Length: 169
Image 1: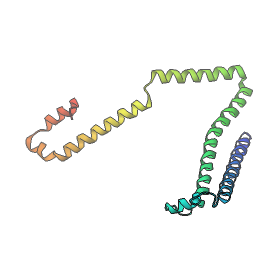
Image 2: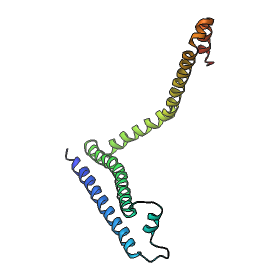
Image 3: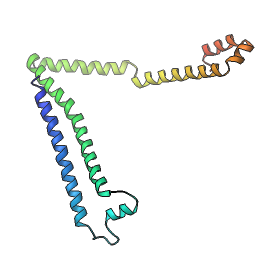
Image 4: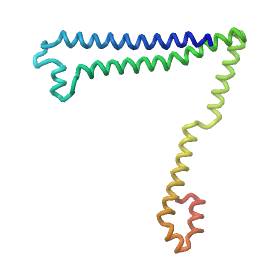
């Protein structure tokens, strides 16, 4: 439970940095806007954006900066949390097992993961095959559903069973 304290502290620091970065960028944008008012020949960029139909371009700019900073913070949280978990877990395991045993432990899992990836089929292949089988089943069902009366009247049940078994439809 004590290992969670640094992780929570890191998350709160990232959130604080996100808010400070957003504020700093918004201040920079607004300072640029205020300094460049009337400097360009045909009006300011915000005036041009308003002419193009963008409502409240200053608010949109600052909101987009806030969203961008939030996305960066989410990216860092997504990177820092797993890495901090690995580092803290590795440290606690090295204290319990010793560095040599920990390295052999990680080496075993790395080797097994490479071997499994090499020997076993990839998930993309398995998912593709499953989707193909589902598509064939739906196509067959739609065909039989559409021509069910004709198949029954002409006595084609055996013929269609043979076609389905051979994969012709």
